[in-house]
Image 1 (cartoon, one colour):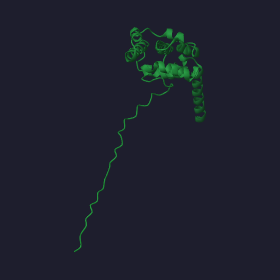
Image 2 (image 1 turned 180 degrees about the horizontal axis):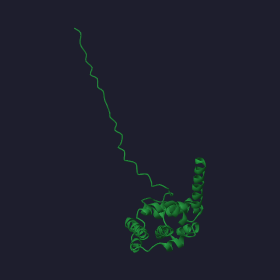
Image 3 (image 1 turned 45 degrees about the horizontal axis):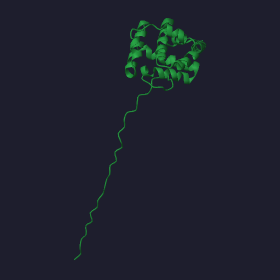
Image 4 (image 1 turned 135 degrees about the vertical axis):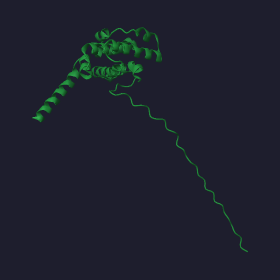
Amino acid sequence: MKTMSWMVVGAMLTAGTAQAQTGSLVSTLVSQLGVTDKQASGGAGSILSYAKSNLSADDFGKITKAVPETEGLVKAAPASSTDALGGNLGGTLGSIAGAASLTDSFQKLGLSGDMVMKFAPVVVNYVSGKGGSSVGGVLSGALGGILGGGTSAPAAAAPAPPAAPTAAPVTKKTTTTTKKTTTKKK
């Protein structure tokens, strides 16, 4: 009987994974992160809205083509009190303002700010699954500023920390001198 119950659990898990792969982005977030539909749609919309502000219309169009519900999700994102900041700043300051805006949006949904880091890889992986790695890479690149990454391909885990600097090898030069002593015979 125990064998049978484990088989049923395995079948349920497999079915859940298949549903997440073929379901909507919202259902994927709900099943993987245990959030509500409203939190999933608002959080995904906030992330996609941030990406939209960092992409050309053509690049964002690639995402909306791969994931048709993108525009609806962007509309579901709660307005952030820091939204105006991010769009006017570039570089590091823009990334900081963008991260603050996302944190604010997530808090309005009843989610902690650290949930941004849990949502983002799920959203990127979902987009990659629907539109291919090149479209996922476009999204990942747009989110790079807030995720601390660049335009690399999406990954499920955080990037590895940089290797510790290594010192140049020390070569010790040793010289041997021999002193010749001679003795004279008398």
